[in-house]
Amino acid sequence: MSTECWKCGKKAVIHRKYEGKSWCSDHFAEQFESLIKETINKEDLFNSNEKICVALSGGMDSSALLFFLSKLFKNWRNAELVALTVDEGIKGYRDESIEIARELCDDLGVKLHVSSFEDAFGKTLDDIMKDKKHGCTYCGVLRRWLLNKKSRELGADKLATAHNLDDELQSIFMNYLKGDMKRMVRLGAKPAIVEDEKFVPRVKPFRNTPEKEIALYGRIRNLELHQTECPYVENSLRFDVRDFLNEMETKRPSTKFTALRAFDKLLPSLRKKYSSEDVSVDNCDECGEITSGRVCKTCKLLEKI
Ligand code: SF4
Image (cartoon, rainbow, N blue to C red):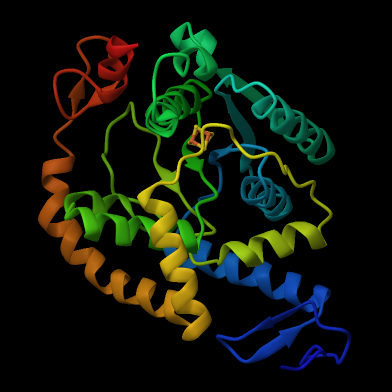
């Protein structure tokens, strides 16, 4: 492994085994940005005149996404960028990351909106977890509901999330292991979920980018890292899949890219087969938000609380 950048000979900060090249910080960051632009163009993620809402947690991935998009959108005609943070109400954890999100938005001149579980559902996640287990299940469902509702209220045309290559592959493998093929149509840089005026389409500009490289890009751009771990994080199937994929990548560099590319060949057929079932949406009897049944998952969970 070379310790010098293959382009300029300066000290390397990363050696990508999957391509056999080492990169200095400047050339790595430059190439990182051009690869994301490639994904954006190839997948046709944004149009001029759009209002884009970035789901900002204050973690490294979403901070890097906001930083990158604010840089990109400076040169885009009439594109507008806002950030949305969901405050689940996790003391000692989310309050810290919201502070990081605020500072970043101030630095970038992006308007930040914070939406809390407490305001939306009358309870924080800390309240819910007093007599419940599986915090991530509650958290994930309620957060998705709130992100969609709030970004729609903000008038956003798209909701950009920081899902990366590792997240995407983990979801693919988890769906295989659960035999849930229908859920696969929700994957991709521009997921085909539903077409409905109440649904804000998602886009994932980092979907082809490894998590470790996003972290490095964030460090090079001096973004602050939120180090505290969520107290409700669980040792889930996702963790087992993550460990398996990391081990495979170490033994056989490029495995992750190959697996993602193979899935991308299947995705159009999966969408053809399953998306007609997914687009049959209705309004939830309880909250009026979109659902595929009579009552949405969020309201069902809220009933249990
Ligand atoms: Fe929510 Fe789970 Fe993430 Fe904590 S680890 S913020 S509970 S999804």
